[in-house]
Length: 223
Picture 1 (tube, one colour):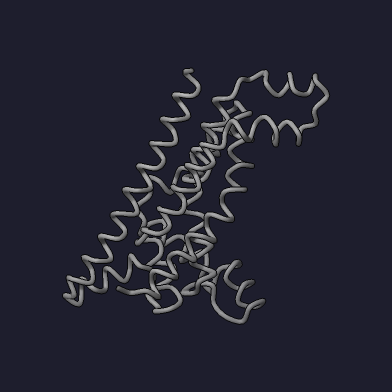
Picture 2: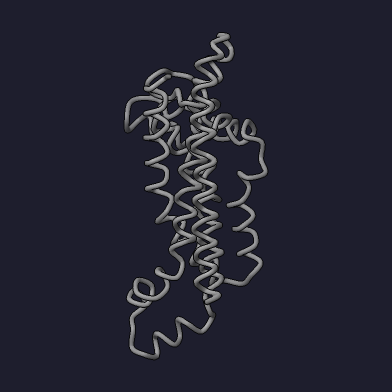
């Protein structure tokens, strides 16, 4: 078992989830309240990582983070090292390709809320912030929870984008998915099977958890 690779994958997944969930709440809530052509374009842009091949997305991110790009040059000037093939570059890429997993479940949860709920709360003298904290968020928490679990699980198992942007540097950018690939290439099938089984079990538990929470929430609404 490659424990350093697993630890790095867990760290990457944790940071990605921690950053994306508040972002997903802000974007998802705003999109749920808008109805325009611009909204459709923004939704398409957010969903793009779902349909792009990981190697294609990884290539464009690699170009965007390289030392010849404005972003890469600014980062290298400030930090003194390249953005590509670093954990920071890996995290930035992870935020981009996991954005739809954080935004879409939360947006759907906000869209399910009654349209006149906010106006009713405001008429009762509640501020926008209090309305969100005491009324809206408790009603969409299952969507937020689903976004958290999906984002964490998808980050943990991502391969193509991670390999393109981060490379395969042990202890810095070598995730558990890349370690499995290396074990297969080295004909170490037992170790690859063990790590694959761990990811399989985690993925199944993740999906089962989401379905259980959603079904329980649906039954409560029916009652």
